Amino acid sequence: MGMGRFPFLLAFILGPTLAFGIIPNVIFAVLNDYGGATNIIWGPVFGAGFWLAELAFWAPGPNGSLDIIKIAGLLWAFLLIPLVLFFASNWLWWTLGERGRKIALTLVLASFLAVVPVRVFEILALHGIILPDWALYINSVY
View 1 (tube, rainbow, N blue to C red):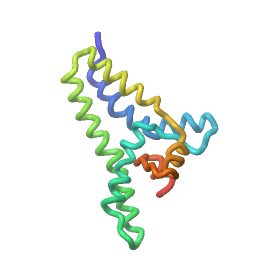
View 2 (view 1 turned 60 degrees about the vertical axis):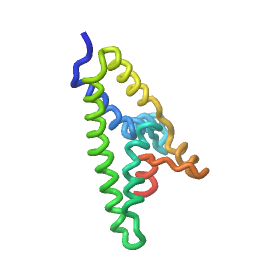
View 3 (view 1 turned 45 degrees about the horizontal axis):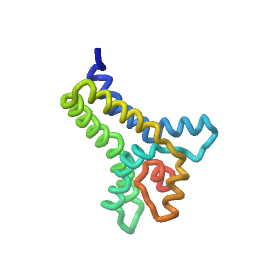
View 4 (view 1 turned 30 degrees about the horizontal axis):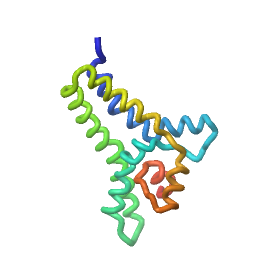
């Protein structure tokens, strides 16, 4: 007997939501590396909201625009992305057969292992490669 629909959807929605920054930071804290950590796949997906909000709302003037960027980034990360993941995983559930679901679940679970210290993204930024990572925005902008 295969996996039920609810655990499948939960893995696709809750998994990335925890894997983009929360779980990597706990792991690195246990390893006594307090510089922070991020997931190189999910960090940019969840962090892109800050980058897009900054492009849309940043204007010279009072710091009020920082509040808009923060709110838009949080709505992106904790509302929009989970909704997209819900609809995508629901579509996968109804489209794929049992074997396809196992492959999709294996791929999403494997993506949780792509964890690096935040300093990797900071080094890339120093060399002109800017990724819209959640941890970079949390650590540097706010």
